Length: 177
Image 1 (cartoon, rainbow, N blue to C red):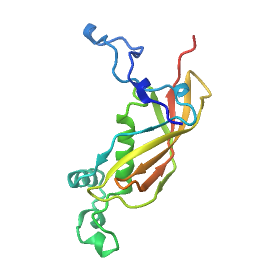
Image 2: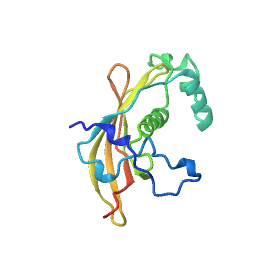
Image 3: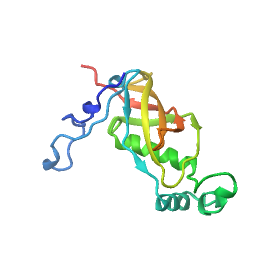
Image 4: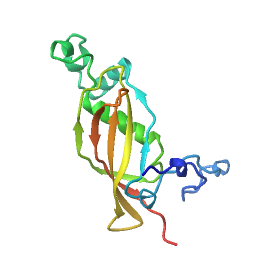
């Protein structure tokens, strides 16, 4: 079942008082509460091409400047067809795509756990997108919060699955009336 993500774009506001009187206009994007993410709810993110500067900046920032990621000759000499992207970079970019979609904008409270499976390599020049499907959604033990588990499947431009991960997130709930 695919549910429209138009619910993300509405006029709900956060409970915080605006920092300036002119900032009382409705927010364009507001994430979903756990109750608005039932089991079976699915959406697709936008896509993102991973470039050479992305790779260089990422591996330099996090310190994984291995020949596997930095030397044009290393990957092909070891059976790969191009310059590899670290799995942690694919995960970080996939999460960025999910967050940019607005599904938990202002409602996400904590990233609690994940299982991650890398299915095939990602190379510089590949374009990735994520299909997100809710697999569990329940009330948390305290407060007006819930726990939402999704199966996030990362695809490349050829429709091949390159990664699957299952984040568990603590998410705001709809206040009781």
